[in-house]
Length: 88
Image (tube, rainbow, N blue to C red; front, side):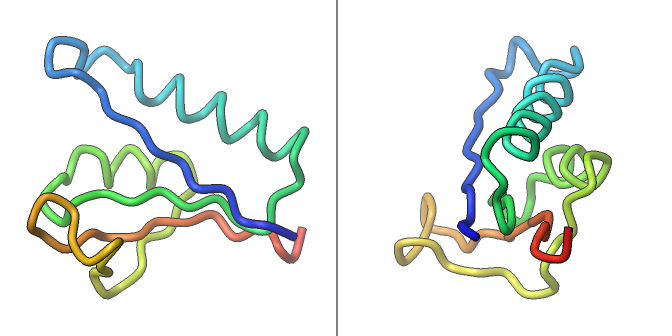
């Protein structure tokens, strides 16, 4: 089974309105129901605590170590979150 990488950005003027929770939740539901992924991966910057909490509320688990994607994202490392569906 394959992996799905989830990328998102919520404009500052739209934060704290539950838009990310709804959009990411619906995307994860659609992927699970229609695409049968082995895992769904989302990546945040280490300092983006709000995004990390959002992902955790939706069932994602954060890896313990920061990772580097394509070298670096905006000059900083990134933190990977995933939902593992391989045993489902």
